[in-house]
Amino acid sequence: MITGDNIFTAKAIATECGILGPDYNEESGEAIEGIQFRNYTPEERMEKLNKIKVMARSSPFDKLLMVQCLKHKGEVVAVTGDGTNDALALKEADIGLSMGIQGTEVAKESSDIVILDDNFSSVATVLRWGRCVYNNIQKFIQFQLTVNVAALVINFIAAVSAGEVPLTAVQLLWVNLIMDTLGALALATDRPTKELMTKPPVGRTEPLITNIMWRNLLAQALYQITILLILQFRGESIFNVHARVNDTLIFNTFVLCQVFNEFNARKMEKQNVFQGILQNRLFMGIVGITIILQVVMVEFLKEFADTERLELWQWGVCILLGAFSWPIAWFVKLMPVSDKPFLSYLTNVKQAIYKKPSSYGHGTASAIR
Image 1 (tube, rainbow, N blue to C red):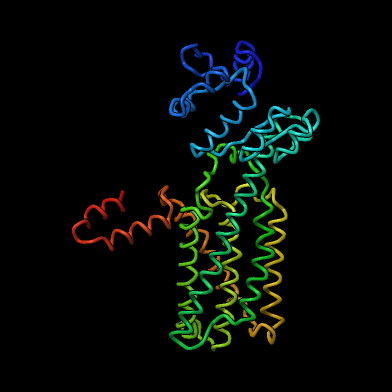
Image 2: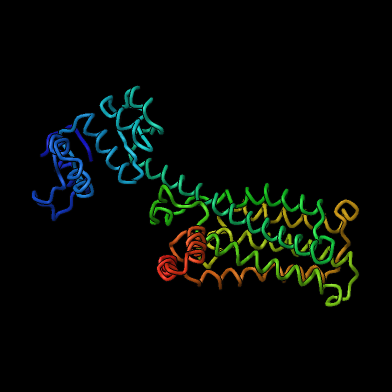
């Protein structure tokens, strides 16, 4: 808390708000005045920065200096204020929040977000929705990358080995149309939950695609590639069908795998992917529409989609193969995930492999570390 009030008033308010704990003592350095902070050397300022919880009798320059020090240390800084004296700090911060009713025009112009109702608890609402949007974007990226990786690898391997692709251009366009549009709507409509506020904030340099997303993505893509390549090279003999029906089985299984994987994408870390699903009626409605459109595509648009009608048992096989992604997701989420960025790890391994023989051992230890 940075305020222009005197130190005694600031301590009283900070204690009431819980900023200063009941075990606070004067020698801790948790409550200081702006002039003290201003007169520290740069080294002392950076050393004491994490200890300071209250800064009283602070000038606009003191507030600006505090923000600059925090940013220099690599922190993501948010500042709230309503007066002209707060304008410099609001402008310098990564996120500036000002009050809409009592805030001055200078403060509003210098801030990024204006709290219209002047209720400080609205900041928590902003955080909750911001984290929800970020989380939903990650869900969709994981889901969409799974679709694209699986489709690319399947068609590439089939084209190289057999000279033909199992998924035609129209079918791939159809998959991307329903998965990009309807999939985005389905995964972007999850509302914020209380558990979002218990997670640590996302760092400035943290990757958008996390190790958890890589784990889920690669597991599902590997399953889809495996099962569809089996159908591509052995499907006709396994199910005793001709080539056109087998291609339809591949296309239908691929789409249904994505439908079932939408449920997995809802919860990237939790094994129970159905938690809270009844509260999101739009998600269930979109999944239902996707399935209906797929039935129409396979059964009634044969010439357009280059498909053949499937019998009930064949639909059952496609549904069973698609639904198998649920137990795979449940099992994969039991696997621990390293905090080290996935791409950074691959880079370090590559560097270790290409080290000179004299320093090979040191390079390998660095990569493992």
